[in-house]
Image 1 (spheres, one colour):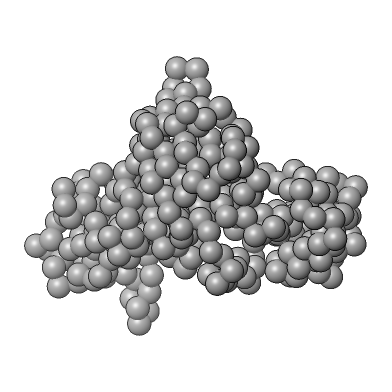
Image 2 (image 1 turned 90 degrees about the vertical axis):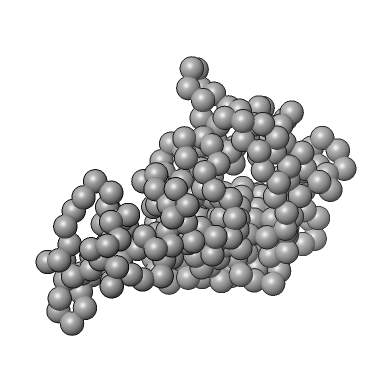
Length: 284
């Protein structure tokens, strides 16, 4: 559905995206990367906010130059809802901007509010909504009109655990039949919702593949070790600390296999992601 060829975007002298190429089909893609890696810039290029994408990005099934934008929805990091409109009025306005038929706008807006559990706040002004509710309103507007392409930038930021779970279920819905890209730094969101994973580091693609393939990058590198037995080295990194039977343990990514082989565990996608960020994988 989207083909990107040699996309480069610079701000003054700094390249934020460099010769980036991707071929994206139907499915849910997780876009991972540290702050400043180019995730938001890539989404803005896809929407046309940055013109650099015009020559580097090709959209299938777009009948004209503006066709892909009518088939696309976008949730930016900051959703600019209008304070003096109600939640329902805000979504109706966006329906008009999306050029949806007038006779379906009210129903479309209310269904979107129901999808994000905001139907009881439909007639509250945006200024009276909490930050998490405004975020859910932003998710709601991205659902309306059944767009073929959905772009979400940090969609679960500010959501409580129950609403994060609701978002994951929305992404897993059978009605989500097009291309969805979820940009996030929360690995758990990727694990629960995405078929494919893309990792950006310093504006370049460090990885593209399945969750299993990303996990595999840390194969034979992950160990759950009692903390009192762990010896820190230059080639090790503590991923997290946890307790087992009141004994403190550390989950460690390390190349020092001999001293901790008996504590080896299967890697997950967070392990694979961190191995990329730290520059050592089972293949390297």
